[in-house]
Every structure is written in structure tokens, then in C-alpha cells.
Amino acid sequence: MESKVVETFSEYIQEIENMDDGAELMLYRGQVTKGNLLPSICRDKPEVDTTQEEKEMLSELRRMGNSLVTDPSISDWDLLVVAQHFGMKTRLLDWTSNPLAALWFACNDWKGGDTHVYILPADEFLSKSKKGPFDIGGTRVIRPSLNNPRIISQHGWFTAHKYSNKTNKFVALEKNKEIKKAVKEIKIPSRNRSDMLKSLDRHGVSSRTLFPDLEGLCKYLNWKHGNA
Image 1 (cartoon, rainbow, N blue to C red):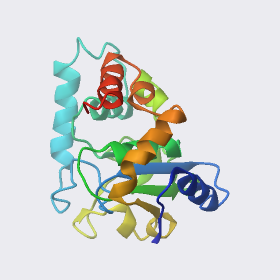
Image 2: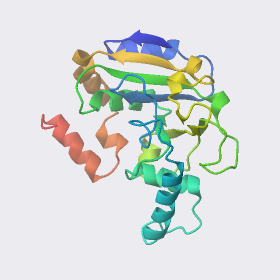
Image 3: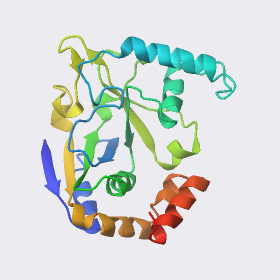
Image 4: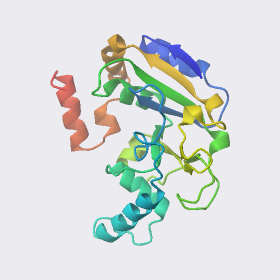
């Protein structure tokens, strides 16, 4: 996997431009952890097949959340996106088509240390199947319905992962035989994270814009006044 280290905002922008291989859809993910590009349902124990548990959780969400999810005809895909948005562990991994949003999520993470942005040219991995989330043939990029303000503001996309019966585990993207050669990495040293967030704020990217609600504004004010 190609990896670069950047220390300034301008270097980051330059690397993003350099890594553009002409793909129509480029996706980005910011995280403190190096690699391990797996969704929350299997990140700690990828060898555990959670498929049946996930189906039951989604069914229970549909039943118990009937008064909260008001569209009775919502598809399993869209319900899975809602579940991910509100904190349920799913087989979806969050990405964004906005490289500045990815940089913010990387640098704003409460965990200390160096941080990373991953880049995926996604054209050839975009799912065109009408199958449900538990029936897709392999890891695929999912175009979500823009069904809430946060996913719109964050330019949200997802990769949907599948338990592999061949390897008896969920396979991280950077180890996936089909996808790993496409994934690239940008590393931001810990000492540069604060300056990156200040530069992002100057360019209109902050919790106030990525979370367009009262919670996002309050978090922004905490950060702006040194109380984050």
C-alpha cells in the first residue's frame, strides 16, 4: 500500500491531488488506527461470523423502532445506514467523498498519536446489485440514500463488508485481494494535528459544518474556546 507522510495542510492538499488517478469517484476515510479497515461489527473479532446476529438486530430495530423510523417500507440498506448513523454496530464502514472531511475526522479523534487518511478510487467497486446487505457477493462500495442532514454534510459513502467463508473471517480492505492495491494512505504526525484542525476551520470544515445541528455547534464552541 502506497503511504505518504504530510505535515501541513498545503502538503495534504497536494498529496490528494497527486493521488487522483482519474477515477470519477474517490473516497476518503480518516482514523487514528493504522489500517484495520473493517466495520465496527467485526473490527475486534473479524473471525466471528456475525451475520445471523446482524439480521436479528436489524429485524428488532425495524420492530422496536417502528415509531422512530416512520417509513414502514424502508429498505434493509437504508435502515442499515440509519442504524449506523445512530450508533448500532453494522457491516458498514464510513467513508466520505470530501477529503477535507476525512482529514477532520482523522485529526479530531479523541485518541492521541499519529493519524491517517485512507484513499480509495471506488469506481470499479461500486455495487450495482439489487441484492440485500447480507446477500452481496463481496466487499462493495455503497451509494447511500441521502436520508439525514449529517450524511449530506459529511458527503457520506460506505463500504459494505461480508464474512468470507473462504478465509473464515471478515477481511480488512488493505488485505482484500481485489481491493488492497487500490488503497492508499496519508499519515499525519501527532504534532501536526492541531494546526490541521485550525486550517480546516479557516476553510469551512469543522464540527459546526459536518454536524449541522445544535450538538455540532456546541462541540465547535468547546473547541474554539479551548474546552474540547
